[in-house]
Length: 228
Image (tube, rainbow, N blue to C red; front, side, top):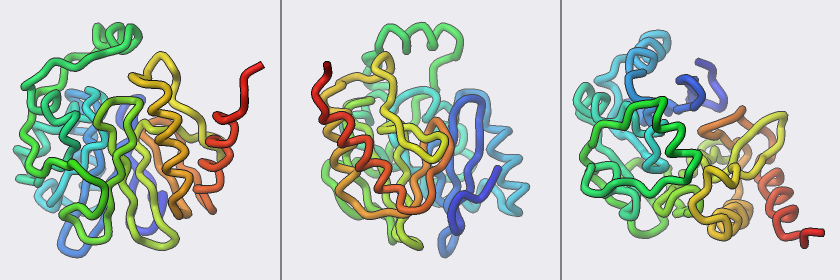
């Protein structure tokens, strides 16, 4: 676990990151990691001198099992309010099976499915969520109901989920093989590039600090260039 921004802790759970945000009156969890890895989250909370009961809200970026694998268990342990987009909520609750790419299906053979979990706050529009200082932006492409969250703290902290990835101080596109709708994914990157934030954190890859939005603008510009 490491602090990637003021009051924002990044926890590595296998090959995916989740994030703990310290707020007045408790904690916000952004995604929950892989199935069966809740003990890793609990250890991180202990290291931060917190308990699972401090979690008041769980913000879900999208439906994939590496991001909602611990959702049901962590909700039971914490009683937290779960927030997700309307287009992904039926998969999260178990009302509908997910539509997966071939690569995602292969990954699913190695990792068990996420346990269905209730969604308390269903997002249908962009804007503030039930946590003060956090706004949601619908960024489809990786999944139909993918959401990125912007924390109004410092120069702004973007929780990009899998709308993009980070590494080496740069922002990269999510691999095609893991993307539901490539055109929508590129539009979502361009939309995030219109926002203003200093730090960006990701489901996969390292955080980008220092005018991180400029790295999104670089990626958006590259994606608009004609292929030769």
